[in-house]
Image 1: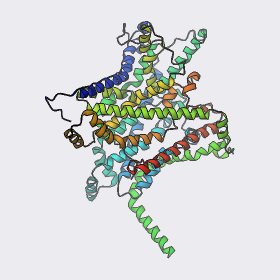
Image 2: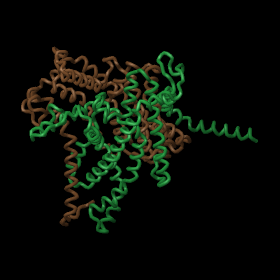
Image 3: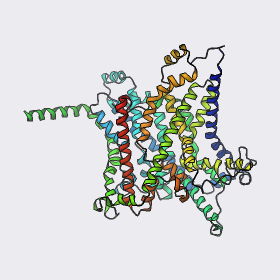
Image 4: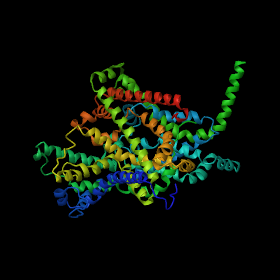
Length: 302
Length: 313
């Protein structure tokens, strides 16, 4: 819409626009303030946190919380390594599988494309539930306490595959036809022609996959009892629930049971949260410009 | 004659196979994956009808018919769990769609580019973190000892309840947290649908003298209906499956909160992790899956009857 210069905006339009600004402002602030609080509180002194709670501007600054986080660098370092490793390997495979499968199912010459589309889609309509899946992975495939338990369950997402398929349907068919006349095979067309064009798609699906892996605590909780094979998020969850359990003991009047155990401080919790969220937040500006273009949610038909 | 036909069919299948063999080859990884991780567990759901024990395995365990389901029914929890799961999801779908469409429209109408960009990024931020992190982020506001909101309420002489010891506010809190985390992402989906609306429609509305309100309700929102229906169908297909991550991290095993915030997924997980009755946990899981399947088939069928273009499949 082009605003006509010099035209007076009628009052109901003013109301309309102001309401929009106000609502977006409130919701946006609700989303960002807690993150801001986490970051500044992680740099606040414990004394300031105890007497004033979380403040927009802490009355006293300190780096102690980060000192505490890294007093035991072995375990957190290991968890960091696990998450980075699993995220990189998993995202790579996940991107390959969803785009390659999406590419094949987007080819109009592929005779059984509808059959296979449904073969994949059906798994989103019906599944066997958590229990048989858990038994298969632990008893059938013996994935307990392996990296596979963290990588395989998130490696193929039918939704991502459908997004890939719809995106590639939108790429002019003549491109692949002319390449075929020049003698290029399907794999070559996919890798050399489609993937470079499909950057918005790769950015979007790559972000989804990376977030799923980076933020995964669930599979560590289910499968990996070995501390050396647990993810960063699970490490945080484990720490937070330990703190909660100790707090509950104190609240129930069992303070003498926890005597001598130094409770991790509030500031340390905040610092841990910052460290655990870490680099994944920085992905956002990198992929933002591709995001809206890459997300073409369409029907599954055809 | 019949033999001839069969031979022809065989020949044409062989020819099709040859023509499509590259495609089939490229599909193999994904086919193998879904067979192992999706189709085999579907078969494994038979343990819902068995008295599963570890040493005998799935095949060796004895059949017990509907006993596991009967236990679920007489434990009296099934109705509450089903109602909670359904009610929470229904609230998430309806309120979520309302907010997402509203914010997509607001952002689209906004003239100030930097305001739009900045606040859209803010809204999207919670989507990036796990529920583990989200919980400690949210605590900065609501923590009983130190939370910013708690302290503000107290400074005005008010009294905040400790949300971890009272069940009553949780239906609202859960809806709020879910919106907090998900609306930013949903808004982007509607926004990408808004940007593909034909600009000529707005020009025509301008010529007819429509104001902004009228353009929103007569042009923008009607054009978003297909996306809304698809998003609705996608959500309805999972309506008996709760957001396990959120409920587990926020509610977990807190007995007090479970009064108002227990859902089927938490129950299945508890039954599985206690390890005592896997048959019953599988029965509850299968019950969820069957209900979801029946719901999506019915809703998709109804949509097909009314407006075939809008169906999911």
